[in-house]
Image (tube, rainbow, N blue to C red):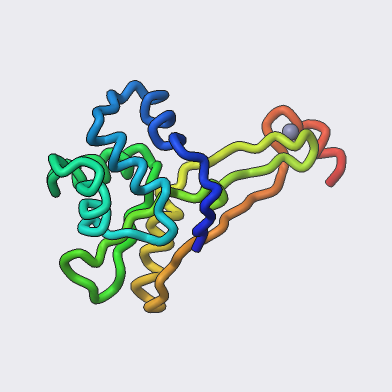
Length: 154
Ligand SMILES: [Zn+2]
């Protein structure tokens, strides 16, 4: 689990602003809690920490902000098996978890849709009773622009 304290502060906020989302003061506080966390936090822990800065923050605000971040792929919500209630953890999505393809010729890196991979991770967690902290998917090959010359290399 990545617990680096060197995580760039303000990155989540910038990512949301980049998507045209308004950042309220309360949201900013919650984002800061997630960004500076050194371990996975559940919603109750996020609420407790955020309320220290802003006592006006309530559960609903925390949940709304988490949903928003999940919708935009900025945090992962991790369901732990056999846990109920607060056993749902959130952490900032690690860059390396993003599935990507690297062109072996020009070096171009493209991300690809991760819905299938998310589903696969879910299956593995259920079937193998394995709690996945990260999974890495990487594809090497030739991008559309390089395929002509790649064909000759085969
Ligand atoms: Zn290429």
